[in-house]
Length: 347
Length: 272
Ligand SMILES: Nc1ncnc2c1ncn2[C@@H]1O[C@H](COP(=O)(O)OP(=O)(O)OP(=O)(O)O)[C@@H](O)[C@H]1O
Ligand SMILES: [Mg+2]
Image 1: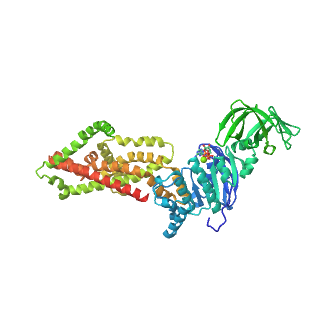
Image 2: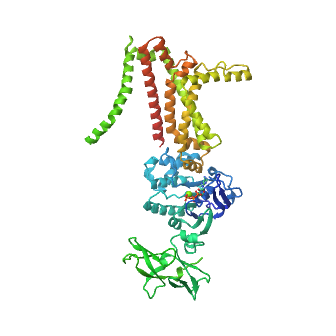
Image 3: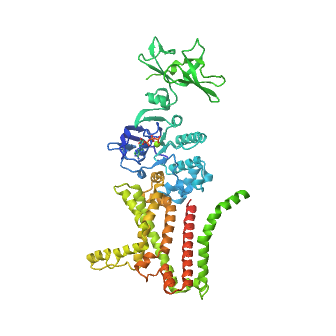
């Protein structure tokens, strides 16, 4: 991508992947990645995120019948070195025999960039990632966060058509992960480059993605904006995977959802709902008179700024909610709960 | 600290004694014997002043260098290939590679003769094809072939072990930046295998410098230093010269390896 050009749009149609040993990693997959968006592939381990990314990159060929289009042009037969996509790996994959600056300049050197232009671009990248001071360091003298900055700079130096990131923050510790995540987010927005970002961390996915593709067992479970996916999960799997979702069994009667632990007013309840779902933040603690559901506390975790409670209301899994930290809760205490009707969902 | 260093000394003592008894003492003794001849220090300077000795030193060095280079190139390619490609018989082939390691130099020499000697296979085939019988077993070329044959298996095994540890992501990263297969080999695979090349190359070089059995089997007139030492020692009973030449052979090998290692090390540092 040169700076003036429109970012790349990527289309996958019918991309399945069966590995040589017979493992079916991906069911036929259709995916449209819009020009300039950050698309996050999210899902548990082994669901096919990396495989999808590698098919986009050209490191893996889809099974016969699958095609990969870059701006409408069929690039399926092109191998990765012809596709001009930037890659960032969890393990950094920096060249240990080259300095930081040499790593960043490597792609430009392959393109026979004149040395003055090469040096200028490398310096620009060092500045962009705020690692000017590290230019002459060896790779083994860098911390994990610094290495990933170098890897980003190296991938972006050649102005790739798209940036593909495979769990770039997974190897970093929590604090650094947050800091670098914010930086990557800013970077992707500023550059406006099309990016595909693989992660199994739903918080990271929500923060970074313009859209999220939730994957399960080699299939797409849902595609949507972070808000869509969080507020209107299409399947139980998505509901459980993104944040915490509480579920109670019961039936609808007279504008309320009736359970064994009490009934929750729910004017818009679908008539056939047998299960009501709601997020922890839609639950509040109430006195006996005002409570919708009554249960007993089975666990209380003090988190500093709040307390996370598990409350048994007769289902197979306890409800999870959060309360102000000031109050003391103990195991076995009875508790009354109110549910905000706007937060109620069913599938 | 003194307590620790005391304990360390005590623990290292057996190794130290062993090292002194079986390495330093014999070496010193060898060096001393080199001086006992009537020419004194002359035994040591003869390696450069005596034209025969010097030419055999040069040809031994040349042979060892050529053997090392050929072995590394062949084993580098074969080792990476064998590690990356699984085909039927792959395991058996790799297991068979350890075979020549057990052969004494005499057997290697014998095999070279069977291949390139007067009744050898290469001679038969070349006579059938061109009418000329190619025979090179009894020369430097035969020795070179024997040494390469002997060194390849061990080097392939070293390369395979190192190739297994190469990070495939590095190659993928290079390719994503536009590197052709050849660039990947040059910029990722060879640098990654460099430590293995250095250690395997050092062993290969040292072996080729000092090997004797193969040369002895092929021809007594072959002009390599171990043969000269043998001749001086047994035929001429020139013990001081033999000892001095042995010491020089060891020292030269050591120096060459040290220089190669520093050069390789400094290119790593310079590149990195
Ligand atoms: N080269 C391969 N040969 C055989 N099976 C493979 C290969 N690569 C991946 N698989 C299998 O394909 C499936 C999907 O793998 P993939 O790497 O895409 O998962 P993922 O979603 O990236 O998981 P993770 O979060 O653990 O990285 C898995 O069952 C995996 O074991
Ligand atoms: Mg993965």
